[in-house]
Amino acid sequence: MYTGDFNPQRRLILKPARQLRADILVIEATYGHPRYIFPDRPVIYTRILHSVRSAIEEGKNLVLSARRIGVAQELTSIISFLAKDTPLVYRSIAEVNSIYEEFGENLGNYVILENEVDLARPFIYPLSKKVRKKRIICTGWAVDYGGLPLSSHADFKDLIKYVKESRAEEIYTVYGFSKSLAEQVSKEIGVNASPL
Image 1 (cartoon, one colour):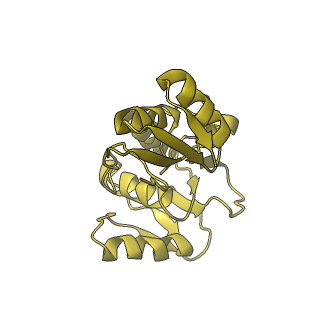
Image 2 (tube, helix red, strand yellow):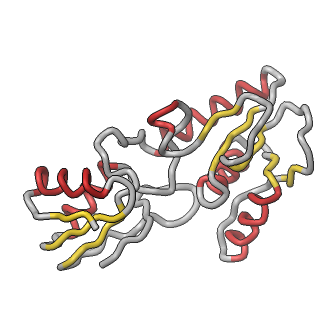
């Protein structure tokens, strides 16, 4: 079995990855280092909601930066359904949103951002785009430099749990921290693992 990028946690969008059993497991290791343990989704969602509500009450912009695919759609959904607000989304994010919606994901209401304006509302920008305003970075890498560790990838604890519950006898790790994850799997689970 090859996992590809996956996340087993319940989210507002996308179903969690199913736990499968395998004899041989090839697993992604994007966050395969013990320092990448993220808070559970409800905790992260609460932090996002607090930031959104505080910004609106103070009449300030809130810029949330995320990858165009995955986290940006989750943020759109969080703000629309949980904060009960209509976020402004960057055009390239809106294009990806429409693909998600075409395949049955309901992301709620949002407005395509045509240009930067000074409104007290949340903005969702691509992580790669420079922004003149203060922003909250939403990615698993935020563990290293601040922001919110909201990611479409499994964190370290979920990777270890997935390996353990797969009952695989041969494990190969790929991408990211593949060497670290292989070492941790061998140590914690007692099954030989090799980085590819």
